[in-house]
Image (cartoon, rainbow, N blue to C red; front, top):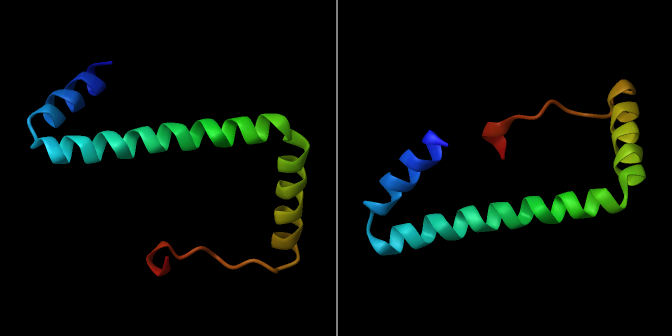
Length: 71
């Protein structure tokens, strides 16, 4: 895609250590995504159960609103 090409071109202008850091980060994200996909593909019923439990907890008032600034 054009966005990917533009991003790669900009990354190539950075010092090698920064290029490597960005590349390592991107690869980790891709690998993490693949692991999550594989884990949930093997157990979609577990994901469904977890979602149902979370929804029930929310309906019972047992959840708190997420504050990203507090993370």
